[in-house]
Length: 286
Image 1: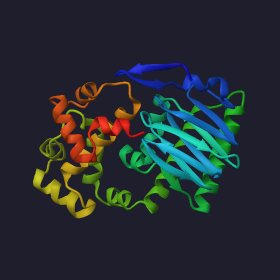
Image 2: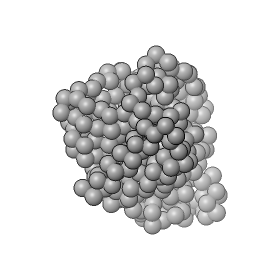
Image 3: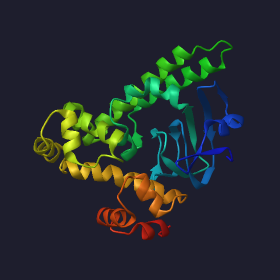
């Protein structure tokens, strides 16, 4: 995994680093089967999309500095830019798809919700029905990739079905997903935050984009999400700040600049108010 490049001074591992370990694949997509014990000790970040279907499994998957205990019949989703490491035990059987960003963007809309929703909830326990449906699609993609004249459009269609099944399961499990599904304005607000959170931190900006007043946007957030509009924006900034601090390649001053804070002190005060630790304390706690 030495083929990492740098974007905004943050090391990112490209899909090319996994080519020699792939079971089968095309330029746009790799397919792997994971059997037995696996360890990733050093957290890393990808510039591509990863989805892992665990059949039977145990261990710990750390995603964006949070530990998730791995269980049977789960799907784990990692969007470009998320950080992970794992310790997977010897009884594990899993299937992994890695998709180049340009290919991923073709079926991404079928996930239906903001990427932040999935970044906050990257592990989804599956019903037996959904697990069987996903196994069928994973196997179909594997068979298509094994074909001498595999069709990228067919693979893309199956990836879209996978995304749709995952989003349906997510909606059944996570309350906030149901809220976004029934409130298009809040769903749009969340997507706008994903796009503009670094530069735009005021509720007024997002309310203008949604053609409503800042006060009304705040009322919607408090009524359906139990947090203020400002808190939603701040949560997104905090997620990225924690991610950058854990990577360790940027100084705290550089992180403040990356997140468009006026200065180092302003960022440090913001971070401590959100997390309860200074950026330095958070970085040193592991």
